[in-house]
Image (cartoon, rainbow, N blue to C red; front, side, top):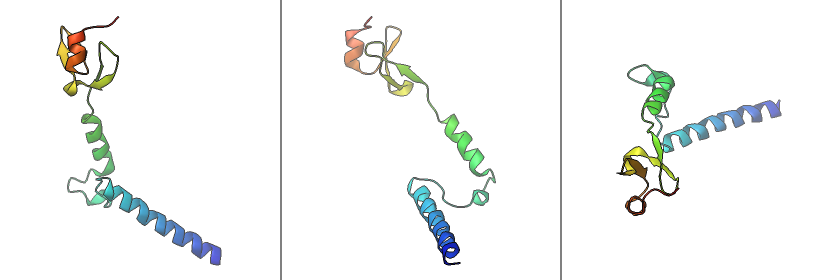
Length: 90
């Protein structure tokens, strides 16, 4: 009986720790049904997918950077102005 009580207390503690970590990471932390739009976790996941950005490879060194942070020159993507100046390396 004592082991069962300890196991239940462990599960409750685990629940609260997980909830605190989720809130600390910027999550909403509340129940999925508490959202105003009623979408729950599925709507949040799809929004995260829509926020994803295309990654492009630097034509000089091959480093992958988000397209919005890349530098474009001579029809290619580069990770920095220095690599754009050096040009494509084959």
